[in-house]
Structure formats: C-alpha cells, structure tokens
Image (cartoon, rainbow, N blue to C red; front, side):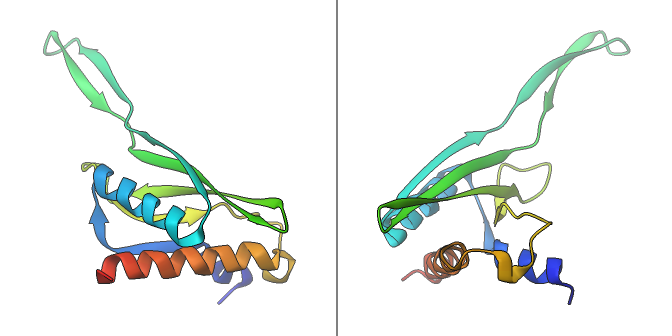
Length: 134
C-alpha cells in the first residue's frame, strides 16, 4: 500500500449503511458530543431548472448532494480544526455513504500532527459506535 493510500484509509470513514440528511445530522451531533467539541456543517443539494428545447419545457437538474463541515476541538486552548465532507452514496439519492477529512497530498503520514490523526481515530470510533447502536 502506498503512503497516500495509507493516509486516505485513515482519513476516510465509510458508513456501514447509507444515511439520509436527517441521519447525517444526527451523526454529526453524536460526533460533537463524542469529541466534546464543535461541528459546523452545511447540508447542500443544489438544483437548477433547465429549459429543454426538444421537449419545450423546463426540467429540474439536480446537483451533487454534499455535506461540508468543520470539526473543532481544543487542545491546550489551541483550536484543532479539521475540514471533512460527507460523500454521497450515489448520484441519484439523497443519502451519504462516507466522510473524508481533507488531506494534503504533499505530506507523508509522519508529517501529520498527532492531534490530527487522533481526531480522525476518535471520529471513526464514534461513527462505528453510532452504527452499532450503542
């Protein structure tokens, strides 16, 4: 496994089943409680009306559903900020299948702060606990 694949494996959390917008919001609440920190997020599902010359009527065109958020905890009074996004399950549903923290492809795994890797692990544990029903 390459270094970048190893980093991606740590940064990406795959859900055991797809989540709706409402369930995603509940999961983010659980993450906030679990890390005893702040989770700021935006749920977005852009849509447009596009006029179809052939059918002579407008049709709705749905964009990619996405959730983008910041997870902030404080270590020694210094904020630790991580940006994560929740990945759509597929292009046709409003469900989400995973979340991934932003990574910097220029960094090796050993270059990441200990607090960053710990936060990724803590969030992974919270997500696993959420799906196990505990």
